[in-house]
Image 1 (cartoon, rainbow, N blue to C red):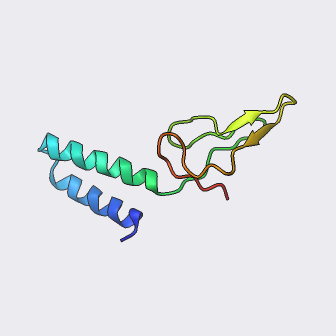
Image 2: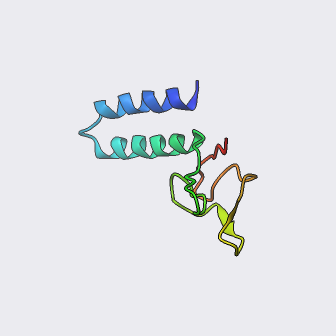
Length: 86
């Protein structure tokens, strides 16, 4: 089963337990954890550092001349989000 399929399944189950707060919280936590396993592209705008799409942490360093060096080698952000640079 792919992460995207598992996430969709958990979302469906979540809708059935809207009246049970503990189960709802556990399912929400599981969905958020699975969401981070699905690789996402960093946010890259011109003249700005690359940012994690989940936590907005900078994934670049300023070179001092107005340009940023992006951390293309970084596959996972510190928050646990998988990254897809291409």
